[in-house]
Structure formats: structure tokens, C-alpha cells
Length: 107
Image (cartoon, rainbow, N blue to C red; front, side, top):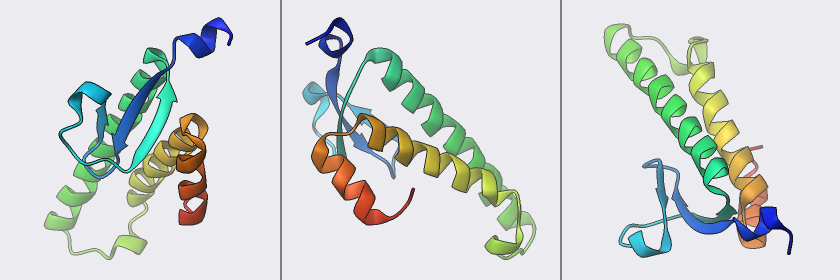
């Protein structure tokens, strides 16, 4: 095992709520298991935050203007960040996580 691999820890991810849980925090539900360094986990957290901001913008616009989702190019940002989250989860995921994401056909 190289030094990079030694720094990796197990985290559990709940995409819907944007949570990254450590084994000691396992009171919540999770969808994916990953092995990541603290830096990689921080990168994933940043993607969750960007995704939340994009979703908040989408919701605000939807409440103000009655636009259909597929006609609103600003929604592309929300879709982009969600795809980036799944790419990062696939990259860091256990074999089971990678297989599950591949079956979801979101990449």
C-alpha cells in the first residue's frame, strides 16, 4: 500500500441531502460508500455546496417565473454539478459503489 492509499478513509455518502458521513456518524441513511483522503472529501463537499447553490437558484427562479425546467438553461448548472458529484463518487467509490453508479446511467 502506498502513502496515498494509507491516508484514505471510508466515508458514506447521501447524495440527496449532500451528506458525507464517517463511520462514527452512521446514524443517517446513505447511498454510497467511498474511500477518500480528506482532500478528496473536501472536493466532494465543495461539489455538494455548488450543487446546492445551483438548485437554490433553480427553485427561486421557478417560484418567480413559471418556466418549464427543460427550457431554462440555468438549470444546466444544477445538472452539471450533480453529474460531477456522481463522477467523483464513481472515482472514489468501492467496487459496489462504482457498479451501482454505472447501472444508474448518470455519467
